[in-house]
Image (cartoon, rainbow, N blue to C red; front, top):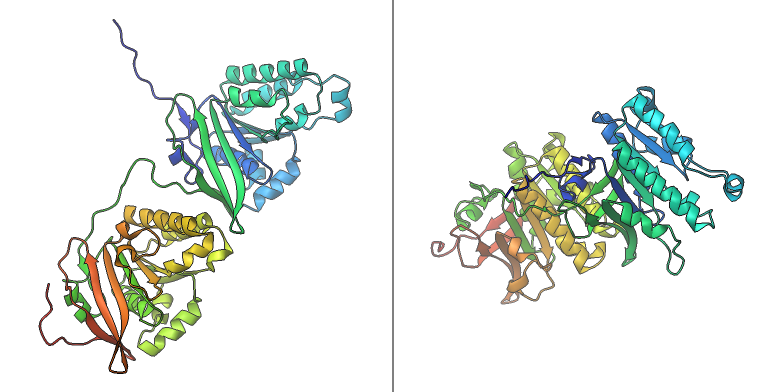
Length: 477
């Protein structure tokens, strides 16, 4: 009895940020992929980027568009910094307008065979390996004769298989109760089917992508947020191959000597540190004290602020003895500021990820995670924080989270966003009224993999920064 040799499916990388991870390598090579999405979902952009980046990687491509003129396509691509004319001159890209005169169609003279003959010649001339057919249903909807349309669809499908081109076909989904006889055929002819949609939640627009089927291959089966950036499509998957977090690193100074003692040597590298407390307890001051110390050591810090601008934050900190201006001027500190409601959670995440990839910081500060619900609700805040924490932990980046509490101590869920299990060190900052005087108290609630003091420590915010009061007895570690 003979056994069949396992041969993995050949794939063509899309080179689109995050998409190949979901597709476990790319689209099926030599087969057809169907992109289904409403107007504005970005399916034309995705199809064109698949061609553009493929051409840059050495795989020439063909474009047949039944809706958008080629000149307009070139202009839109230029806004994404894609130079299509240069690739056309080099013979790596060919754009063909497939728009059909409605009068010709109505007379019954329409056939794809002439168009396919032109494309076949161009494919041979260029050695093209990829093709995108955009909005074919626009032409097919002009027909009233089902038999002719079905014949043309079969002709196209047979031609694509014979040419062994890696094909992407973009179509709009049929409207309810108005599905035409050819529209279901698109999904059956596709070896890979991807849906793209835009939805609004809490007055914030978000885009989602889902792989519906992929013959002969595994794939990420969830819905994945994506955005259209100024350089193309970016998809934001949580790792599809399992947790790849770096182990916690060695201890590093906090910037406050007495806090180093309390923590048994300082914060752990590649960990997640949470500062939680009411307004005015000094959470931002504590985070920025570490930021200044890290930059002084020559380490880079990315500071994500949802509540204060860069200038306001730097100016306010000067009163507590911290001056972050030299850190910015030295190129070791970079701020990323935006109101939470300015964009969806996926765009916030991808924006942060882009800066992390470009800046390569050793540490990231998020101030404050309590504002993240304004991205679109609790689930949006959770999605943003989990993706950001996962990305940082995979890269060995230390994350500092600031959370503003409401005054009610809740140590079971101190993060307020359902991410407490991802927190390695949690520090609670609180007020205590005593004999008509308000005192500030610091307590380490947990520090994973490290001994630490369990007592409450009184502290003050002075013009020399945070000063911890010397206890009457040695700290218990």
